Length: 443
Image (cartoon, rainbow, N blue to C red):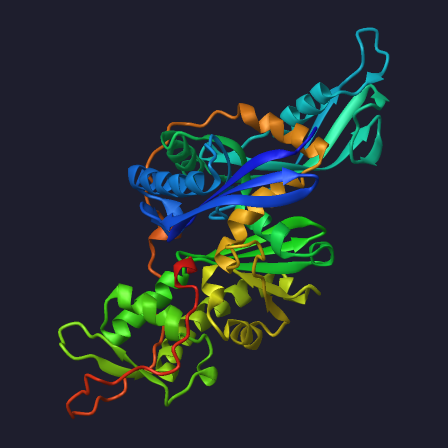
């Protein structure tokens, strides 16, 4: 089965929707177009308004199609790890002929044994996202990666199945269909990010990928090239922006700009003497704030996020994996985040940034990873996944936040606002040390 051709990846994030169009020829992936637009209709990684999300997807489609001069029809879409469950499954079928003699195993037999593996009691509110074969067993002989062409009377498959809430899957499909697209394949988003961000050794011996988006932060544990565990913290870059807005009494738009222009994740790296003007709500003249104080606000929230992740990862002994932690996602573009993460997790931390032209930002890791993942699938994996194409989605509904999403994150302990001098502000004061930080790519 030839994987050459055009692939389109779609990443539906809380703060931005990204699309890439890539050409895969001779095992080389070349990005020929991309779209990146502000999200609408999502909350903490979950679609809550289908029509708004459809509009944002269409905007991203238009951008990508104009850049690539290509009409998008099929997309590979990432499914967030919210309430993801990872479980083993097993299927077995007879492949003998009518007279009981063995016969050669074909694609159809692999398809049928996959269907047998999928026939197990799933709760009515869950559906299958993906299934990945571990091994096949022919006539009791195990450890087989591809049974096609072999002869046998009994075929078994042992696999890993990823399931998620039907509502999340249904709403994603509904949005894509209303945008005029067809789902080519669904991929568990952390698995795609890890496939791109980790090298062979890190995937084999074990590593942790932390994807820091705008609406949430996802930790994924990879070992033996498999996704073993995920943890989602319902806090991300938007919460950092909100903290800045509240403490400095400025608009959310101003807070975001301050974060990407002057922000540090570690206050010890920021200069106390380097100050910049902040437009305060209800005041005509701006107030001066130091880089160090802004960094204290950012660091407080990031410490809370990382501490929660460290607690969850420690419970499954993931922090002992030799590959350490790889940070990616839009929020990781902020300076000092690797140093802060190392202080809290106590393991080696590095940041992954894609190197594709025009997309050299960690915010694009997931969408590039989606295409990179599906183009690297082998033939037997494609045959197995073809069984999922018959899955029947229930009617889509808007997401009704339950306890998993409805609770507000714990209030972060922010630094006290320093007392303001009563002297008149100098309107001509100019900021120093301006640093431009890919403001359009914070996810």
